[in-house]
Image (cartoon, rainbow over all chains, first blue to last red; front, side, top):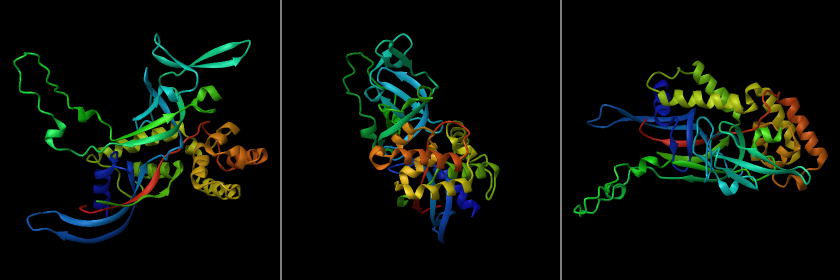
Length: 193
Length: 143
């Protein structure tokens, strides 16, 4: 039993399963079927039915995270155990502007007619409340070698070293959430307290 | 491997936190050993996140069960109840976010009542909201 638990946790913990979500830890084992031994293989193979705790917020769910970084395209949010949350610039509070000097987004909040607008910055590491508006899974199972690494054109006579050494596939994240804070009550927690 | 049911049940943050604490303390199963670095990492990071950003650290199993019962007469969907328990809102604007079309479905008195129900059953530690963790079932071979 411990061996099954251990191998299930080893296999899934902290991994994203395609179209399922980020696996956290084993919840329980429901059923263990008979074990098989295959010729030429020293291991035993067992079919196990189990339940796993998975991070998979539904669309429209409200979550809290921390701002990891800001850029012109939007805000990158982390939840500690899960980093791939993007709030695009058009889903920020309206009207917002990007402060080039500080490299931060600011919400131009209109206090009242007389007092004018207040710039509320979205600081790095600040707690932020957002709504999940979209989720995206990328199948990162290894593809065929041609697809993953298109051969550079054979004409090397130009002398330009145009070969990309970096593997583009390595940068893809398997599970990305898109957030939005363009509603009352969303955004930095400090704004609403 | 085969996924039987993608979302078997929804877990509230409190359930997840207690499971992870059990794993870390080695209750009911062995502690993660040095080969299970992934499990140790995700357990640590998730506990950190839940304790810091969400109000679930101070909840009790009885409190959550009582709150669920008290939420029943409001006619909310399971997802809305889950969010209310996880976020433990303390202002009306937060309820508006979590309950769809709350202006039409809930009267002002009901919103007040909701806030009170949550405040009685779920003691407040941090003034935040949040949620995470849904459970599901996977079928799998080759273990």
